[in-house]
Image (tube, rainbow, N blue to C red; front, side, top):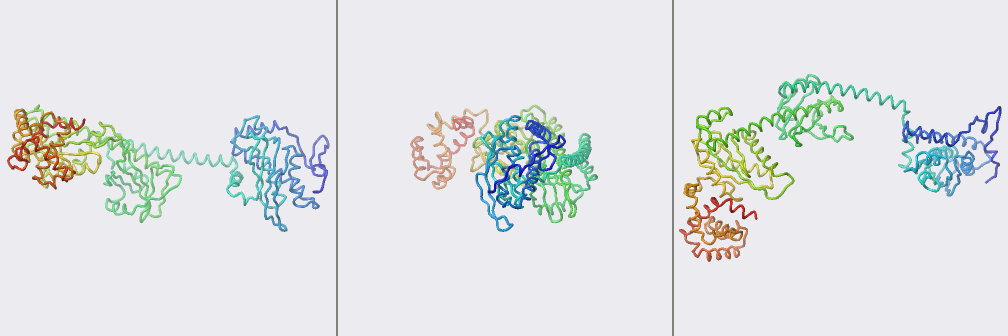
Length: 627
């Protein structure tokens, strides 16, 4: 490398008390003043804009020095590159040196460029440490800008310099690396994003415009919401609320429940909406400001849809429809749609409160009927208030349920959920007016026969049990149905019949009619309970004395054996036993009872006793099973 005096690179002179460097007017600025500017910029425009500011500042310094060096035609391209760190240090930015260099050129075309080096005593890192302490990342933005500008000016192609470690991070010195921009790829994007940022005044202007637009949007949404809320306060229906909204936005609007039953629509016929709903296809939208609002496309346009929530559950959906050629104003329409969903939530809550109050009142009414509190005339008069004719024949059904495993919901919540589910099933699915009373782990249902003419009472209850099994997987539902009654005063007797019948229901036969109990149903009542227990003791003997889990197992085996008419194959299948296991148990039962289980007369007596046991000792058996 040719040796040149430093003065050949940097001419500093004083003229008329002014300083000049290479014939350009120059000023001396202390590093403390630079640090003060660094601190103020970070506080006022933020660290990212400060990076841009200092990088561009350093870049310009580097380009100016490159132009001076480029005038020296006697220097080779590599020598011009190597003078960069010398001039950098001469100007007091840092003590700079190259540690690695890999440079290849063909004519005027740069094939490769890879330099590494060290900056010691960086003024920029020094001030950052004094003003802010140790940094999380590199801080020498003017230095990297200078190196980038100088080398870009010298070699004539875009290069980029970055710090691999920085004194401002607590390192002993700064280590830098320079390469062609094309080689940095993603690592250079940060620089380019800084260089393309809008001027702060332009950004503030755009931000202000956005704020004004947002304010106007919010004012429009607020005005619309207030109109809808006023309709709600006046007690008007959802149709009245949709009228107001439709007059404003002229969009078809649809409200559905969670079973896709249309509750209200405006601007479109029910038939047209149902036909197009099947073609809805969700459109993925990035960075949606309203995550609950989804956009769908269909054959002739698009739609916005948002769920309606009630007590944390989705109970329905609100939809705006846009014909082909009309583009949704997502920012405004999504907010209005959200507000409409909130209004619908309040309407649903009001409706739910009214229904719950009515169902609770009807349940209390049923309890009072069963307790015998009212005369027949009083019952009939009160029943008229809920549009229920109790002069007709009726049945009472006892629906019991048992949860097969624990779940996250509390016990009280589950009981309430089942009550609401049964109430909604009869009200919405079957359109039946049913009195429902709630007891521990069971519901008592009073259903008049004239409401189920098309299907008998057993089919009605079977449909209910099937519905509940689909909705709640971890519960066993059993039901018992009373005999037909015509006198409402005898509702208490009918309830006892239903409760007696349900005790004989099982997983395999979940519904039992009281009439199926035959003479046993007639015999069992409070007055002769002791006589029934004596009959059970006489026929079951040792099996009945001091019942425990082992004896219950034998009793269940005997019951299924008799219920299957003595067929070993069928009984073993019901009990999930092998035939040898079943024979072992039957031999043991035979020994304990000291009787022939194949005797038809004995089989009849034992079956009566077993059914009676299940009815009169139901609570005792349940307690033993739970132990």
